[in-house]
Length: 329
Image 1 (cartoon, helix red, strand yellow):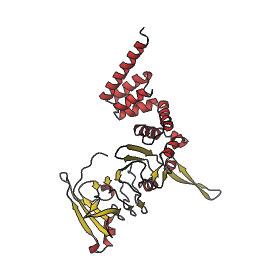
Image 2 (cartoon, rainbow, N blue to C red):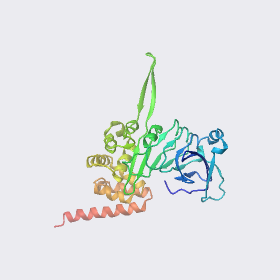
Image 3 (cartoon, rainbow, N blue to C red):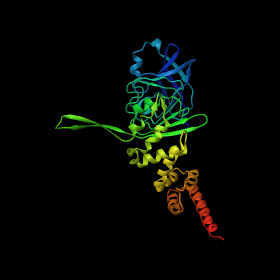
Image 4 (spheres, rainbow, N blue to C red):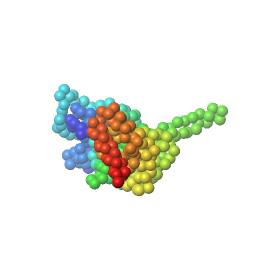
């Protein structure tokens, strides 16, 4: 996610002993950054319905319980302050010590695309992310072998989810494929058969005590379900090779083998992303072969990627000179 504009924000909250619970946010932007502390009290909980229908929940509280905290931000011209809920929320940055996201906290936030979180397991209330169909990205501000709230999100979100871990020394990216459930009726027997489709369900079983088991994750790439989902499989392979945290040599070769089998799709993906560094890697791993150089150049020109085109021309010239030297006695 690109750096978002942090507009002015008015937060309603309550105290639970010595910690703060978020009740609602009113602001001018669709990006919300919840502070780590409010008046010296750590924010550990996102209250029920806080970004879906906070007014209903606040009415149940006594006025003395409701506290307010103001944050000055950069407001864009003609911006209007309004309660940030539902479609008005696009991205949110949550405090590092968050312990709970209460029931229906983000229910019907249909435009919510990205959530940024800290380390530590999170307890989820019922329907916390129900109908958040646009949620595609999670970023955890910690290393990939740390306990996080990822398991809760994977239980809530069945669609494809890209998860990034940003530790101090290493970045890791993992893609969790989508899956869906279906009940099929056997009319003569008057029974329903419960079926699960897609590789995503298996991938969601890769966590142990809130920690991602990377070897288990990489092992699942051999499963037939993911091999039939070529676009998703390619994304998984590229993420693991580009950000190889915890990647063993065995599974590295597994992913490279997949790229070699799908050379053209791999080259197109790098060109679409204008990934010049990646082109050198493909050449090094014998994926961008001499016979595919003309194909890559045509695609690069069609996609209007001058930097990639220059790299491809340079690589082609290197290959030509190497071939000439081979027969130069």
